[in-house]
Image 1 (spheres, rainbow, N blue to C red):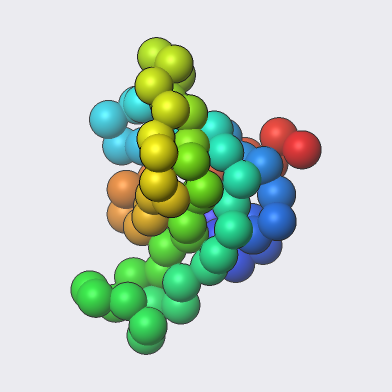
Image 2: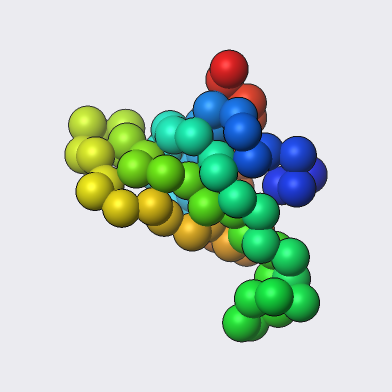
Length: 72
């Protein structure tokens, strides 16, 4: 996964529980800036596949992501 390429792109993420989220990736977190030291991305107000829309940005760490794709 090249999470560092995702900020500024609309993404579709499948987590390890196979729940799908869509939203705008707005930031990349370097491993050394995170606790524990894993890379992550921030997705603003993602929408889950069941239609639930988060009212806040969500951090997805690399170990939580099963797959990620750019959708626009």
